[in-house]
Structures are given as C-alpha cells and as structure tokens.
Amino acid sequence: MSTQLDTVERYMEGFRRSDHAMVLECLTDDVVWHIHGHRTTRGKAEFDDEIENPAFEGSPELTVERTVEADGVVVLTGLGTGRHREAGPFQFAYSDLFTFQKGLIAQVDSYVVPLS
Image 1 (tube, one colour):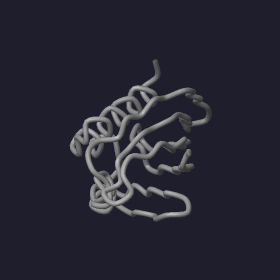
Image 2 (spheres, one colour):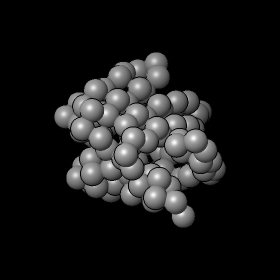
Image 3 (cartoon, one colour):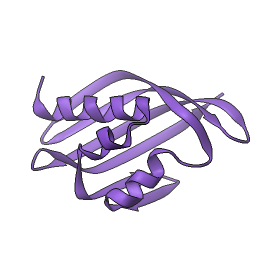
C-alpha cells in the first residue's frame, strides 16, 4: 500500500470514529475541501468545523467500494449512512478526490448524492 493510500485510510477511519485529530493530522495547514453543491472550507479550522456538522448526529458509516490512485491523486467511491438531526437517517453515495502535497492531503473534492 502506498503512503498516500495509507493516509487516505487513516483519514476515512478518523471520519468513521469522529476523531478530529486523526483526520486533521492527514491534512496540510492550508487544506481546501470542496463539498460540491454545498460548501468550500479553507484551512484546518474550517475543515474541523465541518467534520461534525451540527446538522448531523453521530459518526457516519462509510463503505469504500473502489479506490484509484494515479499522478498524486487518490479517488474513493462508496456508500454511506448518516443521521440528520431534523430529517432522520439517510443514505448516500459519495466520491472523494484527494490531492496531495508533500505527503499530506492538500485538497479534497467531495461529491455526495442522496439515495432514496
């Protein structure tokens, strides 16, 4: 397993546990997170605020279905479940594209599609 894949696996496990420190140690200080159609965060402090968005409860369940690595980028696709405070439980498909800089995640592009 490459160092980048190792870093992405730690990042994903951090999200599964809602372990902020575990997620943040995988990121550059100036990380950018594009959650397309929703929000863009810049820097670790904004990223940290979005790890546990107040509109949601608990930790997400995340299953990785496919991983692709090429040219300094790792792409994951998978399925997840979560719980919205007002709307209740929901399922989604996701694709995350991780761009690296000096061994750390410098940018995340997240595409999330709600499933019925």
